[in-house]
Figure: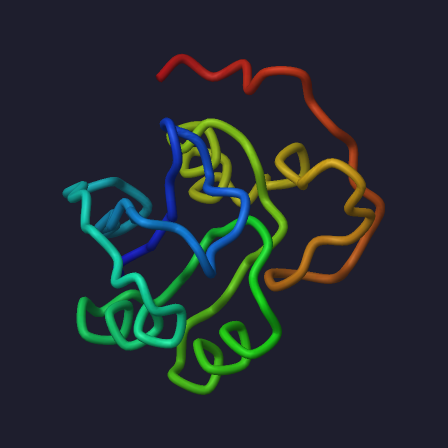
Amino acid sequence: MIIGLPILDNRIAPVFDVAREILLVTVDDGKVIQQELLILPGIAREKVIKLVDTGVKVLLCGAISNELKRSATQCGIEVVSFLSGDIQCVLKAWLADSLNDFAMPGCQRRQGRGNGFRRRFRRGCGCSS
């Protein structure tokens, strides 16, 4: 499976719609097999097309417009939005099914994976990347 994480300065990009780079991570049996940095198109709606073309099945991102989220979901991409933090820490948390500590400030519920619930926030990721 391929996971996409839009990045800015080694962190989750705050807004997917204007992100310029994405880290594509190939995961097999819960382990990272490959990581590749990809430049995204400048036009927002073309970003989803690029994700589909590269085989992304899960998008871990910050904020995302309703239009792009709907488009990605209709194309079979699971969107987990309103995340923030160090890219490798977010990836490790997703692999461990524990994204609870990576919500964007001010977000009370996670969009995407699992049920919505109150979030706790972490200062620093505490992972050793």
